Image (tube, rainbow, N blue to C red; front, side, top):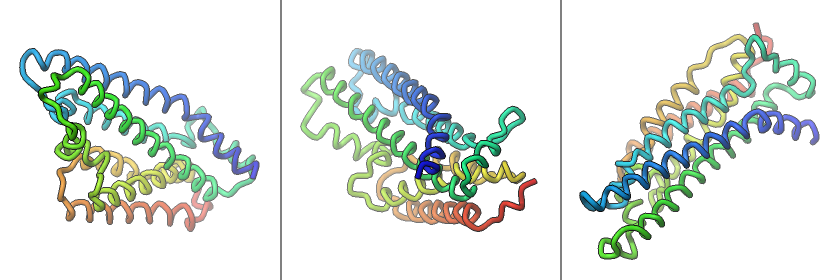
Length: 243
């Protein structure tokens, strides 16, 4: 058990400060942009909450922060000229596939934390919006309707749209396994473009309008296929491929 804990702490120790800084930067940028537009908006025209979310650039800021998170996680265990992490991993006396699976579980937690922080930021900004905007423009369902009408918010919290929830879950699984597989392949002298493709694809396809069952379904299947490919490499490809 101590060996497993050491493996997890190795991943956490090399990423936790970077991820914390990334989340703080994302929160600061989104809050500043939203608040600035909120102060300007009532002077010129009324902005609905869902419109203000888009106009303040929150989906774009979140998207770039997500790509940054993917980069941080994928480079954990990446061996460069100065870093010989393979020697450290060998001293832990665990098989490479076990380490990759443990790290993929840690990465899944990181992606879930990222999602939770983004959702918390949006909810806090929604409370700020309600506190600042003229009550004549508000009702009891202002926030609910914003999540219903805005593509980014609806994808962030699908509510009763099961297909979107399943799609997001499949993407999280695939991203976690892909981030763990990327440095494993690199240490064995192989190139891997699956994680780069998946990160950019998620960035592009994440905000979608409601009722896109067909789109959700094929993204779900694609994500599962990529997750299966990463899992297959981790579990069954032999380490003697290493250069």
